[in-house]
Image 1 (cartoon, rainbow, N blue to C red):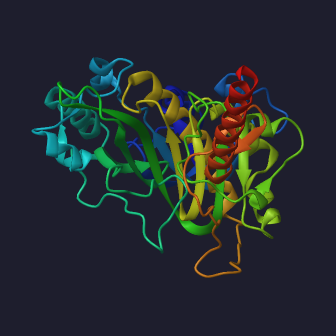
Image 2 (cartoon, rainbow, N blue to C red):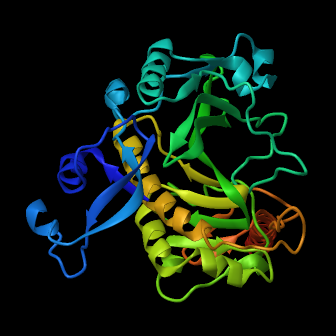
Length: 368
């Protein structure tokens, strides 16, 4: 199976002989005379490489680069969508109900989707919803004042895998009351469907948090933390269900770990059943981030395609093994190597108040 970028098409044609090139991701099965590359210089002329041939059947998959030009109007910014209250009571409504989508930016994303054989939905009909049976760590648990809205969804295929890309908006604060504009915290989500199931494995990047709190909204119990050799812990906090470390190490082969480290400045990664998700706090529809994301996805999906050939995970708990979250759930606070989960953070705050109260009492006593 050969997957080749458009820039190498002419060279491949000169080696294999003339063949029909179809659309991006489509395949042509054909028998070719293929040169033996053993001992050959990869940069040698096609004539030299044709000196040794063997007849094999190839599945030739032409991977055309995506056209990201329609996204140039967004530059390095998020879509100019705003959550605006119609009244003071409107604060109690969800972000999705208060959201006013910028139509110009929406058209740019829709045009990008159309050019690249994706479908576009300004407001997805089936947004991901956390339930007992679907509770990945990346998915925020909705509350009365903190219900996420999923916006600007595109669906298609990358490297033959079904892919869904969207943006998540959640309230960050109420903003200025007189303006009736609500500040939003934003993330980009890339969900990829896999043909086999995996245990839940979370790689929480230490390079993309943009502050002291983790970009993963659920805190995972400490005993499921796995420390790997080398400098991997500087890039990711790794969480694996207890007893499944060997399965995780099968996934995280050294070459895959290097790919992940290269993407850590942007993405958290989570395996969850038949899905792998990439999460970033940057706007996926800015041209630079989209281009980087596509490069990362092509490389990492290429690795997963190879892994899936021999992947034979047997769940301990059906349908697949999952992580357990802390009772007091929420974002983890990261202070260097220290990780403060919500419960511990609350205890620390209470201790601080007690110490402060004791100091005030002592100062008052000494003053008298």
